[in-house]
Amino acid sequence: MAFTYSRPHAEVWVPDASPLEAALNRTTDLGIVAHQDDLEFAALAPIAACLEDSERWFTGVACTDGSGSARTGVFAEYTDEEMRVLRRQEQRAAAEIGGYSAIFQLGHPSADIRGDGHAALVAELVEILTAAQPVNVYTHNLADKHSTHLAAAVATIEAIRLLPADQRPWRVVGMEGWRSLDWLSDDEKVLLDTSGHRELAHRLASVFVSQIEGGKRYDLAEEGRRRANATLLEPRAVDDVEELSLAMDLTPLVHNPDLDPIAYMTAAIDRFRADVTEALQQYFPPVGSDL
Image 1 (cartoon, rainbow, N blue to C red):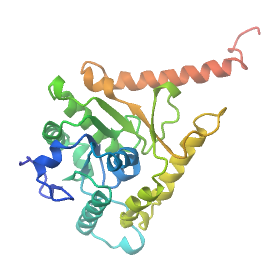
Image 2 (image 1 turned 180 degrees about the horizontal axis):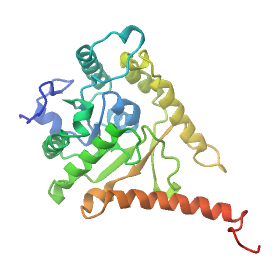
Image 3 (image 1 turned 60 degrees about the horizontal axis):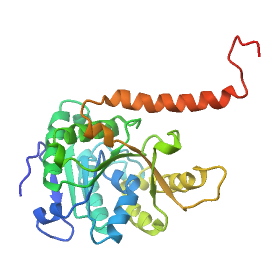
Image 4 (image 1 turned 120 degrees about the vertical axis):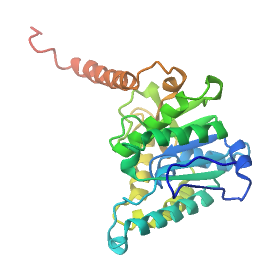
């Protein structure tokens, strides 16, 4: 099985050395993200679920090459090429710990998928999705403030929309990243329980030394977010779970290609605005009112 890659450093690796076709045929859950480590920090729930269920397998796609990563300390003098090589090694190590069916590293510079290389990325994702035909797809949410995250999420939606209707995944969710999703109405939140997987989260995070020791404690931040999500989800009830990742449902966008993603997102924001307005109007009458 061969794939058409647009970047020279692109690769796919199967941790248990199964034939690639078999690794993709068994894939049920596919994560498509911008950077190495985005899967491990954002998609902990499906990674853990696939490890525990012999009928489910997780495959990951990291779209960029990691060469533009922030660096300090022992990594401050690393060249872009040295960082690219290190980040690839880290992602492979995480895939092995997480028991991934396969891991694609497509090797795009970050600016590439935000610009001239975006169409090439979409074409690559169409090939991967066609080969794997996953049940569930996980990507970044469409309110993410990181422009490369947003480009990867848009490419994912575009690629799925190009598939025949009967080959599209059953569910597509956008995960938290550089913006939390607690603002979504409760009935719109996709709740991904990560309770009981703290050790796995630590093991996955620990391989990304270039990031954690390079100036960004993503491991502590993501654990804190998951614990906060669980506790702050409902103010009038005790916690049902210890840790929780939040996501938004993007499935309507791929099953209805005529649905405008901008309108879809602004409608969710408008519902949040309406919720806040209604709550405040109980205490603050509209300006100009005689009340």
